[in-house]
Image (cartoon, rainbow, N blue to C red; front, top):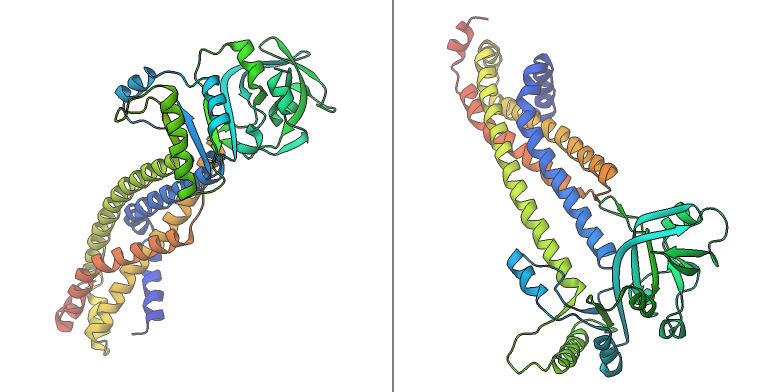
Length: 408
């Protein structure tokens, strides 16, 4: 029997029992949709990590009080007992790190921004050295960034995000306007390029002021984050990490063999950890989706057995007219695989739709991968074939005389 004819017969059989076919496909649809949704969101998150979270570039090394990631509350409590990374540490690294191409530092908090009658209460207030825009790959869309002189003399100037311009400064040229950051006046000298959203939260609601001005206003009792651009990866970055570690250990008078009381890290560390977490999460969901596919396959097998029973006389007629066992076997295998493939197609469409809805609601990134669609459809078809073997074999083994005697 031709394959195309088998597909036509399978579609006719499915259409003749639409409600039963829909109920049969639920397990396959849920399984495939779960896989597609998770893979789409996971790939989107990985791409986001590469393009957004890793904004400081692959060559930047960070010195901070705490690592970017920790797994337990106990670890967090231990890290809290460490000494703060201070402005003097930044000065020491700036003076003594011979391999560093550029060095910057920052501190952040949440505060209010006021201009005229407009205000915000949840803006990120950033204390930046004059080198931070370049280190963080921030492009200045309008105006300019800080100068080294403004940084050294605590000049009250500010670079703002596009949300501050749109929601607080209002129409007109933002440059030269005076804003109040937690009550302190600053003159706007630059506007950062829009960064978009991260997990539903805007990345453009911020104000950056010179770090010295920031420390003069808020005090130096909190820890800084220091950023050093190594200018390259691999051995160069490792050499910069070693030099930074040496500078910090000397400043803290740490004896040889004692653990560091600070963290020297790279953006790749967080990226790799998040990638592992996403992969593990995806593996768990894929395993659960696999159970759904197995359940869906069992349901397909049961329905195919019922179909064989209902169509016993049809099978007898086909055999009496010359159909061979392999023709009957192929007919029911194609029907089972077609049923499962249709469920796979519906699941793929549903999974992509769910992922895109999540993206629209919470701005969680999603990236559709062609390979995931092809693999899902292949697995769905394979499930239909596997669980259709027994019903198809049973149909092929029917005695035509017995089958013709079956009641309609």
